[in-house]
Each structure stands twice: as C-alpha cells, then as structure tokens.
Figure 1 (cartoon, rainbow, N blue to C red):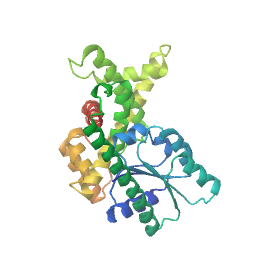
Figure 2 (figure 1 turned 120 degrees about the vertical axis):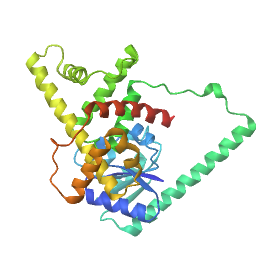
Figure 3 (figure 1 turned 180 degrees about the vertical axis):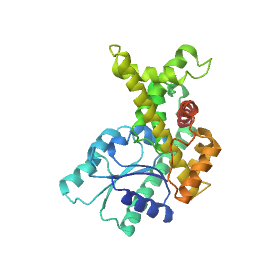
Length: 311
C-alpha cells in the first residue's frame, strides 16, 4: 500500500511514517504540510492507496481539501485531528473520509484503523477482479468504448507537480516557475517539435516574465522579474539537490535517490552535497554546481514519462 501524509506538524508526519513502515503496512510515497498542496490527479499518478490528512491546517483545512480532491482521487481517506466535534467528524464522513484518527497519535489506534481500511481496499479489489473475470468470460468488454487520454498542456502540469513533490520542492516558491516552464516547453514542442532542442534559458525566463507582467511591462520591470524568477528557480533546484542527497545519505538504495539523483544532477554535485550534510558543514549555494538547463530539460521529459506510465 502507498500512503500520502498531509499535516502541518512535521513531527506528526514523521510519527505516522514510522508507524506505517515499521508496522509493515506499506510505504509513504509523499508528504505535504497543507491541503492546498494536494491535487486529486497528482495523488492518482502517484498510485496513492490511502491519504491521511489533518482536519485543521493553516491555509486549507482537511474538509475543504477533501471537497476538492474527492471527485478525482481514487484512493481512501483517513482524517486526523485533535478536534472531537461530532459535526466536523460527521461532515468528514459525508465527504468521503473512511475513518477518523484522534490526536495525540496512538500507535495501536493508527495501526488498527489503517488495517481496517486496507482490508476494505482488498475486498473491493477482489470484487473488481470478479467483475473483470465475468466480463472477460461473457465478452462484455468492448475495446471501442475505451478512450485513451491524450497528452496535453494540463497533463504536463499535473505530471510536473507529481515530480516536484517527489523531488521535495512542490511547496517551494520556484515550483510555480518550473511548472510554467513546462507549459512553455509543451507549447514550443507543438510548434517546433523541439527539433533544435530545448529553448535557451534566456528565452524561457523572458517568456515567464512576459506572461506574468503582460505586454505593457517596461524593460526595467521585465529585467527585475527575470532576475527574481532565476533566483526562485535556482533556490528550488538547490533544495531538490539537498533533498535527494539527504535521502541517499539515509539510504543509498532509496528509490527516489536511485531514480532521480543521477538524472537531474551531476554525480559530483550529489556526492559533494552528501558529504556536506554528513559532516554538518555550512552549505554554500554559490559554490554548488547546478545545471539549471539540464534540470528543466530532464523535468520536462520525465513529466512526459510520468504521464505515459499512468495510462
């Protein structure tokens, strides 16, 4: 089972992850500190089976988040909160939450609730398998009725958000810049098919600045926005390097580290960052070699792959 944890308290997320993984219940595939960072399609692309979400969060609470993602999200939802209001709990159930876990977190309660949800998932899967078998025997499936999802601008942005989450930077300021870049590269590919490779960084940042400021922006305003965008993107990429290096330091066989570290970054940069973290030395972003263009290019092609794998 794959889990996604959403709680503004990092200690709670850490505790839940430990209970889930130490208890052999499954693997935590992603985390978020607020409901505003969640998207139903993103969770589906990550193949999330169970979402654990806090009721009260600073920007977007659990109830509002469920309202937004439930029409799209295929998995199960477990609400978590120290609030014991019957009205709020009742609303959570009516919106689609499967069970309710109270704070402070109790290991026995968490395991018992999750095991019940897992049993329900397995039961539903068994029923679905029976239906598929019957349809196959009775030839009820009509291949012509199946519609293939086309890859479009919306897909590239959703896939990109999934990747940014796995790279540990979905909540960074530069994440929106990176998603806007994916939009631009997709549009550019429709016209030129990227025959001459990815556009220059200057072209990309000019596009972002013009998109945000509009055609009436002065040259001075454009330059200021371009510089700010470059800084946001660089900080986000650096944070991704730090995130992957931390994962590799904790477990060199971590699947995210193995899958993404060598794709998005030069091996020497990753090793240097791991050494910095291990020795507790003060990091220096100015001395760390980051290839921004490579990161953006890999992000685009990986977003295409994520979409293809989800079909």
